[in-house]
Length: 208
Image (cartoon, rainbow, N blue to C red; front, side):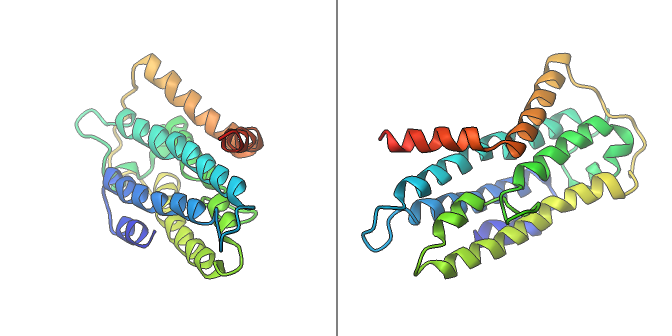
C-alpha cells in the first residue's frame, strides 16, 4: 500500500500511475485476506474473504477498463493521451469521454471511506477492523486518502484546467465507443447498487 500509493503520486504518465496503483490495490486486497483469521478465530473469514473478492472484481472493471480505454480513445490526431497533462480540459473537448473517466475515477472508488468519494478500500478495511488490527485499518485508510488524491487530480485536470491543445478528440471505432460507454455505465450501476455482487461473492466463498 505504501510503495504503490507514494510512487503513484510522483507519476506524470497515466499508465505508470495505474501500474503503481495496482501495487497499492494488491495491498488492500491482501489486507482483506489477512483479516480473515485473527487469533485462530474463523468467524470473520467468510466476510473478509468475500470483501477481498468483491474488491478484486471491482478493480478489474474500474481501474483497468475505463481509464485504459480512454487512454486509447482520447488520442488527438498527432499524439497519444498518456501523460496527465494530455487530459487537461478534456471536458471541453469531449464531455462524454470526460464523464466516463469521472465514473471510473470517482464513482468506482466510493468504498474508501464511509459516505464519500474516498471509499475505495471499504470492504478490506472493514474486515481489518478487528481487535489487534485497528492500527492496520487506520494505515489503510490513510493510504486510501493518498490514493484518492492522485485519482481526483485527473478529475481536476479534465474539468477545471484549460486544454493545452484545442484539437478535437479522435473518435474510436463505433464498437469501441459502445463498449467504453457500457463499461462506464456498468460502473455507475455497481457503485449505486453494490449489494448484489457483494452477495454473490459471499455465497461463492461460503460454498468453498
